[in-house]
Amino acid sequence: MSTNTHAAHAHDHHHDDSHAHSTFSGYMLGFVLSVVLTAIPFWLVMSGALPSKQITALVIMAFAVVQIVVHMIYFLHMNAKSENGWTMMALIFTIVMVVIGLSGSLWVMNHLNSNMMPIHQMSGMK
Amino acid sequence: MTVAVNPTQTGEPLFYLADEHPHPEGYSTSLGFWIYLMSDCLIFAMLFAAFGVLGANYAAGPAPKDLFDLDLVAVNTSMLLLSSITYGFAMLTMQQNKIGQTQMWLAITGLFGAAFIGIELTEFAHMIHEGATPQRSAFLSAFFTLVGTHGLHVTCGLIWLVTLMVQVGKFGLIEANRRRLMCLSMFWHFLDVVWIGVFTFVYLLGVLR
Image (tube, rainbow over all chains, first blue to last red; front, top):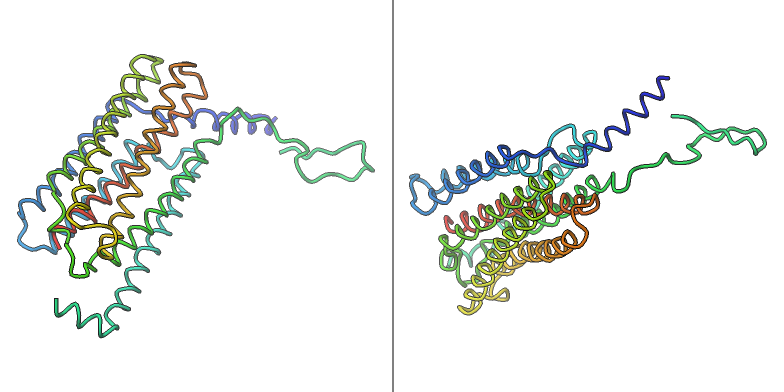
């Protein structure tokens, strides 16, 4: 009997997860947040409102990260439950790979760059 | 899980499922498509890494400041963002089984997508006309590869969108078409996510530099 209910439960899961439960208010909230999170970085860069370029760069990168999360939740309907958590596992794996790939490339190539004297001097002459 | 014992054999039990229990058609499509999107995400990550490494190597050529028109990029970004919300409306009307409205929202999404591609191609043509070709410097090679790959994805998405509109027109909102529209929805929103990275790291940070 217990195997029966287990099998029925497993089947249930496959079925209703293939359709995301999207709502009008969810999409609108995601859209409004995206517009705000897009407009502010553009305004910051175009008007130069912040005193230093470094701070502006950090702020707009933070806005990008927040907007990506907003898109993931409201447009791509990511949650820990869909497909029994496998979409989330795939996403986490991808994020780990992306972070290793990006930070590793930038780190290694930056060191390579600063250790190559001739190129360094040339860029100084520009 | 039941372990099937095949009685015709010599009495040795089989330690695997003799036959797979049936699955409804396409039940694993959304997970499979999500894994495709994640692999696509890795492609874009590597193109971003290449741009990050080479983005400052101008070879005494034009820099982002000389090339990029942020007003145009802002318009382009809004086109893609608007196409995302209109695709969302298409999904909502699809859930309510309204074929006509679904087709209308898909068409509007396609128009915004086409506007995005049009503006991007205008920008590329303008840059190439000014001599900022992909061959000019490592920065421009990385720029055209990254932004061009994104544009190519959007173009494929547009072709897919038109194909699905024909499908829906011919067969209606059948289960298979709903599944396909779901996949295109994920693809379309995913491209918008990639564009967030592009306008932030390529355009805004480029102009700041």
